Length: 301
Ligand code: NAI
Image (cartoon, rainbow, N blue to C red; front, side, top):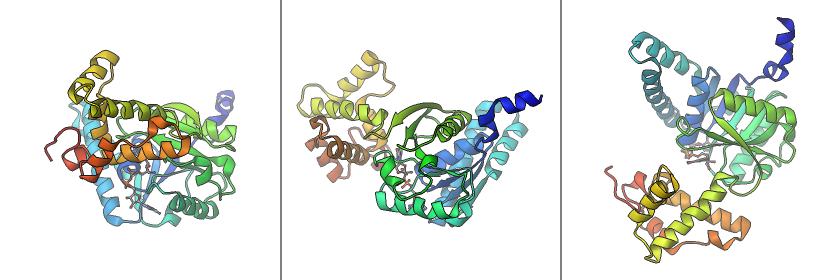
């Protein structure tokens, strides 16, 4: 009835169209979960090849999801994949992505390109459009410092691989409005994530705590106090973690680990984030983890 319709006011402003800028590892995952949840999605990337790659990987992932969801019902599965894929538009032009309820930025991890992008979008997008950055290491307030819609801006920090990891960190910029916060919380739930909220502080929640943990694991190993295998077993069986710290570091990439530690050290001055000679050496040797075929462990390419 009518009263019901008007009682949940946030749903009246619900986010239904999303643009993801940057169609790489994170952007394609974000686009997938949104499309899967019934949202109309535009992926914008500078490179057409990246857009094609994103579409292919989304299609493959959706087929896997579809098989799980619909088991033996091939026609349902196929229509699930097709309908989700059909909701995704690909574009190399930011103008084509500007008209959405929510725009999530997942481009290169550098301040200036992110600021430039949002400053441009601020002029192109309708007034109601909410802007969000998926940055993991740059200050949300700094990224949005040049825009007028500071009340409609914040961080939406996803985890890799986006379709699998259930968490979404919602970063409240200093001037984010309650309405914007409610809208992104609702959107996060709608795309299947569990949301936690954090202020704009270095590393937010997860990386701020993972940093000292992985750094101390590497130091323990570097000093020869225990083998990496035993440290991994220790944290899996003793602390109940699904992966040990070296398995996790190899998976996320040692270059990324080094970068995250460096940023946290610069921003907090906490000595726990100081450079780790072993990590620096491995990165210099190109041992980046799973993606390069070798990190703390060896992988078949
Ligand atoms: P990626 O390198 O896989 O993708 C970035 C994409 O952005 C590339 O395809 C590039 O062509 C495109 N791009 C660069 N500048 C652009 C512009 N001005 N307009 C449109 N497209 C542009 O990088 P990834 O790993 O997906 O990271 C993206 C963002 O997500 C970064 O801010 C990163 O810090 C953050 N992030 C990454 C995580 C990870 O595990 N890799 C986890 C959480 C956040």
